[in-house]
Length: 581
Image 1: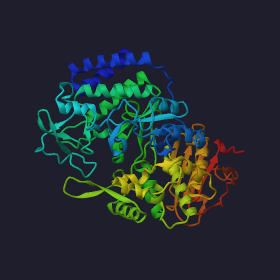
Image 2 (image 1 turned 30 degrees about the horizontal axis):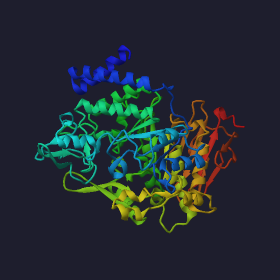
Image 3 (image 1 turned 60 degrees about the horizontal axis):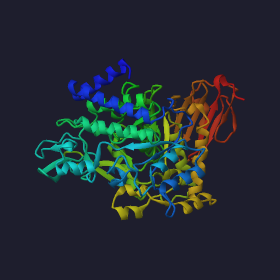
Image 4 (image 1 turned 120 degrees about the vertical axis):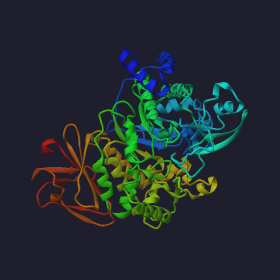
């Protein structure tokens, strides 16, 4: 480690832990890096491109008899998605006790019900992988917490003992659950900080030993095949009574240290922070553009896309998109519209009104979904998350298959058009719907979008002409294939939003070569006519452009009218200087 990097790292550690501890911690990090470099092969640093599209999935979403689910997943993806997707986010695949994997018992092991580390490594030969670093909390059944309960001095400060009589009214509560949980320890009953549930015990990062443990685990993940590291619920990492305990300076400093360590040990790694919070707080994890996360989740996009297609009005989505600042060459948005979780509505605070959120929540219920609420600290509750499969969220159960597919494809065209790297949830890619039986079995709203699928049946449905799954998959497949061959959709390519007709979502993406793609999405169930002149583009009269989706050529002229069928998507390509051939 060179002197400049050493001093920078020491300065951050000094801020977090004080000068005396900082030097000791740095020595530990140096020894850790030496061990890691001896065990791992260095990879060349690279950035993402328009060719990068990620799939989000649990390790056991697809099952086949007694075959290890990891092997089933690998077999299925190699058959259907090998040349379609570049990366796979495997949701927490470690031994766990609750929350579908997000209450980790052992960070260093693979859940034997899924497979083993060899299976993970094998998958990494075919796709870039994203691992979850679920490090705000750990399972109460973990060895760390059990050692704490038994009085092992080594683990005495791994967790946060709290005074139940103190004032916690300013602390952010992500769920309508108690912040503290009582446990019997070897030294009596203690109230322990449990932000998310009684089974998810917050780790105490004021204890540097905890942070060093986590750094070592993180390096192990990169050695095991992780190119992307997702820092789950990272905003809650540092606790300071009298504050919201969210996004504190110490938390940002810890993320910066993680970035520094990975820049040294595994420079190919991409750090993605997961913070389901209002946009301004979310993008704070870009830091100065080169010292914290490489990517941040674009949390307003799912609810804003849903609102747009519910109302047939793109004004809120386009106004928000116009407010986005360009990212640096080392940062990008991580875009998605559906995931294993529900559709969070906190990120649209200040963008959608409370009434608009409530209307959206009511429609989700009408479509067979649920609404989860959060405690506000004053005895009231408000919607926190809409729990529904995204396909069902967009369409009424009685809508035709054709209408569902068109509306769903329009939503994904918006996702794939946006600046940043897109991620598609496995149940979206393969046209799944609400799993109400799963909710009955688990009693958890989020189970509505976490169904386990049987390999043979899923494959049969994908091969059956006219089936919903086949129509959804082929529609999204076509959009992805076009996107990944078009430099104008590079994550950092310029984006310019066009305001012309609120019934349309319109923007222009421009590549570094100055080629352009005009994106037009009809967000209504009506046939629309758009005078090209209303777009106010400086495109030359007489030049010929091409719609990448239909392959039709279009000649630009003042009288040009663009006709759009309900939910139709147009991606019009214009080469630099209008030199289309």
